[in-house]
Length: 154
Image 1 (cartoon, rainbow, N blue to C red):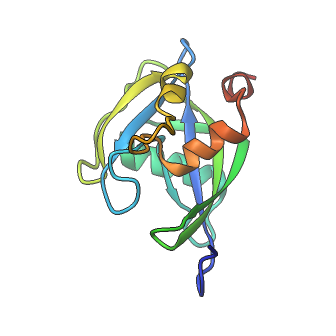
Image 2: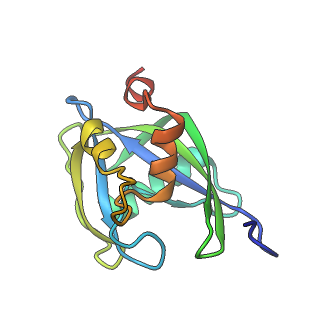
């Protein structure tokens, strides 16, 4: 079912890895995807560069100062029940200080930030009748890019 009368919005989602190939992930709180796991990110502001968006959103949400490096994937995410449509751009990022750890800066938007392996993230992608544990853009990322951990690593 197509969304009517609305235009897709653009979101940038940061994939931040550590030396053990784990990524920063958190459980969402809010109107869209409550309880589901995602990476830091958000809407692109008018006139904002994509990499600047990844860096800004990550700082606002986790306190991490990062450097956006490259676009690794794009997903088309239609939230049918919420009548919302996003184009999500996933950006590989690195911490400026490799020792800095993510913090819960926006407690009304995220339950907390944790380091998760790609195996952990993929294990959250269950479609066996249980409530979805991955935010739709991340679910689509894994579906469309089964070797995402290698893509991000390179």
